[in-house]
Image (cartoon, rainbow, N blue to C red):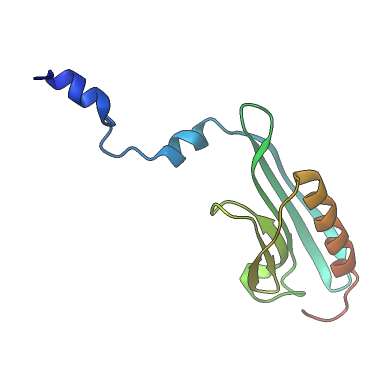
Length: 125
């Protein structure tokens, strides 16, 4: 008969063990920036948050253009990209959709292009 210690060693010794929480503790937030920008419909905010995994890859991100005059829904988030719910998705004018993620650099350029276009809009979306 195996001892109790060996049996416990085979199962997780924590009652509330959640591997996602343990993984999140190893991430390092490398970007946390909010920038105020002028838009045709008033002032807006560009928000960028990026977390890096121990090996240097981007593990988690949140990009958003917030302008309540441009988009009344989704707390003013006109456009945003994030992967905090386990999948890569895009917010646009209150709606959410999945998108194909290739790299953070490509995504950031796509986001900035969309922001540039939305800042020039003179009517709500």
